[in-house]
Amino acid sequence: MTTLSYAVRDSAIMLRRDIRHALRYPLMSLGSVIVPVLFLLLFAGVFGRTLRAGLGAAVPASGGYVDYLTPGILVMTACSSAETTAVNMSMDMTEGIIARFRTMAISRTSVLTGQVLGGLIRAMISAILVVAVALALGCRPTATAIEWAGATALFALLALAVTWLTVSFGLLARTPAGANSLSLLIVVAPFVSSAFVPAATMPAGVAWFARNQPFTPIIQTLRGLLTGTAIGHDAILAVAWSAAIAVAGYLWARSLYNRNRA
Amino acid sequence: MNESSWLRAVDRPVCPAAADAASAQDPPRAFGNAARLGIKVRGLRKSFGDMVVLDSVDLDVEQGTVFALLGPNGAGKTTVVRILSTLLNPDGGAVRVGGFDPVREAGRVRSVIGVTGQFSAVDNLLTGAENLMLIAGLCHLERQAARRKADELLRRFDLADAATRTAATYSGGMRRRLDLAMTLVGEPRVIFLDEPTAGLDPRSRRTMWQIVRELADYGITLFLTTQDLDEADRLAGRIAVLDRGRIVAEGTPGELKQRIPGAHARLYFADAGALERAAGVLTGSSRDNDALALRVPADGTPASLTALLASLDRHDLRPERITVQACDLDDVFLALTADPRQET
Image (tube, rainbow over all chains, first blue to last red; front, side, top):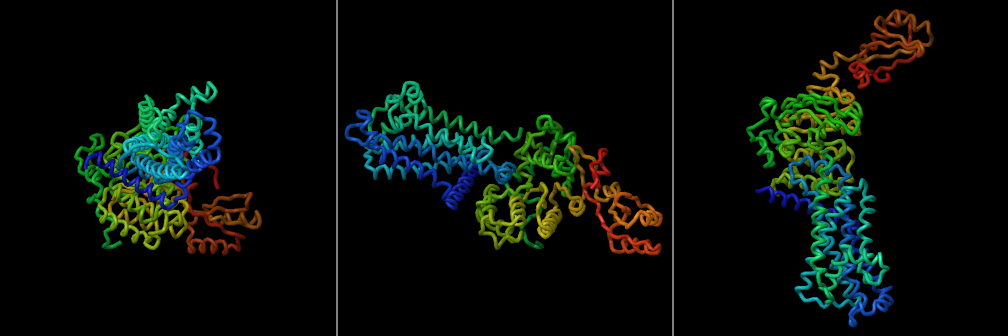
C-alpha cells in the first residue's frame, strides 16, 4: 500500500471511532441538530409574520419568510455542527489516547481527519432535518435537481471549512468549555449577515460588515439556488471563501497538532 | 501465557512499518550495530523556558533488558520518555531508539516502540474489545487477525469478562492492563512504561510486575520510570537515578544498594539514662537525644530484631517502642546527591 492509502485507511478508522462515539452518546451530537431547528421554528414561526411584513420586496411576492430564512439557517447548521466538533476535539486532546496515537506509526493527521469527516456527516444529517422542518413550515424551494446538487455541494464545502476551523479551536483551547466559547464566534456570526434580514436594512457600519463577511455570499448563493433569487458573483465568492477557510483551518489545525514537539 | 501466542517472538513484527524498520540495514554509524533495538542517549538536554529539565543526560539500555529510570516527581523522568517516544524534541544531545533518531526518523522510531503512559492512553468511550480493535486496525492487521489478537490479549490480561464494557467503567488496575494490552497489539520491540504502577492497589501492582517480567522474558527492551526503589529493584537489570535533570547514579540494583545506607531500626527509650546505656551496648548506633531514640542498622527481619532485643535484654534494657524503616528513595537521594533533601 502507498502512503496515501494508509492515510485514507487510518482516517477511516478514526472516522469509525468518531461515529461509534456519536452513536453511543447521541446527546453529544443532539445539541448541534436541535439548535438550528429551534432557530428555524423561532424565526419562521414566532417572528416570521412581522419580519415578512418588514422585508417587503426583499422576499419574492409568492414566498413566505421561511423561504428567505432557510438558507441562513443552513449556514447556522454547519456552524453549530462544527461547534460540536470543536468540543469533541478538545475533549479528545485531554485524553491520553491522543498521546498513544502520536507515538504510533500512523498517518499523523488521521486523528483530525476522522473528526472532520465525522463532523461533516453530522452536519449533513442536521441539514436534512432542517430542510424537512422548513418544508413542513411551508418553505417552497424552486430548485431544480442540479440546483439542489449545487446547494448540497456548497453546504458540504462550507461544513468542511468551518469544521477544520473549529478543529483548530478545539486544539487551541485548553478545555472543552474554551473550545465551545471560541466556536460561539462563528455560530453567532450569521446573525450579522443576510441570514435573517438583508444587509441593506442594517445601520451603515454593520451593513458594511454584513455585506463583506464570508457567510453572506454563501447564504446568498444558497438562497439563489434554492429559491431562485439573483446570485451574480456571490457564487464565486462563496466557493473562494469556503475553500480559503478550509485550507487555512486545515493548516492551522495541523500546526497546532504538531506544536507540542517543539 | 505458556504456549499462547499473545506475544510472538520479537523477530516477527506485524506492523508493515515495523517490518520495514527492522529490515533497514543502515543503522546510524555513530552508535554502531551492537544495540540496535536498545536505547542510547548522549548529552540529552531539554529546557522549558528558563527551567532546565534535563541537563546532559547519558543513558544506555541494551536490547532485551529491563532498565529503570528512578527519580522523584519533577526529576525529568517523563520528559525523558516523551523525548525517546517522539512526543517532544530535545534541545540538544544524541538519541537513538532502536537505532533510529526520534527527531529525524520519528516514523521509524514509532514503528518499533510502544508507550504506556502515566495517564492511561485508552479511549474511555469505547469498550475494551473496541479499544484493542482500534489499535489493531491502526497497525493494519486484517480483521480476522485483529479479532484473534484482541481476544488473546483480553484473555491474557484478565479482561475477557469486561470486554464489552466501556473503559470508563474500568477500575484503575483494569485500565492500566488494557493500556498495556493496547501497547502490545503492535508487537513493539521497545516498550516505555512511564510509572506503570503509580496509583495502583498492591494487588494490581503485583499483577503489573508479573506482566513486566513476562515481557522481559520475551526479549523486549523495557524502559520503565518509577519513584519506587523497591519496584526498580524487583524488575530492572540496571537502574539510573535521575535527580533534577541529572543522572546521579547508574548501575545494577546490587551496585546501587552498596552505595546507599541499608534499613534501620529506631529504638525509643523512657529516659536519657537508658538511652545512654543502650548506646554503649549497641555499637554502630547513632543517638537522637531529643527523641530519646537510638538508630541502629537492621534489615528488618524478625531474627535480626530478636537478636537486637536480646542483647539489650542482657543489660536489662527495654525500649518502649521500636520502628523499622526500609531503605527508601529519600535514603537513596541522601546518599547519592551532594545536596541532600530534608530527612524524613
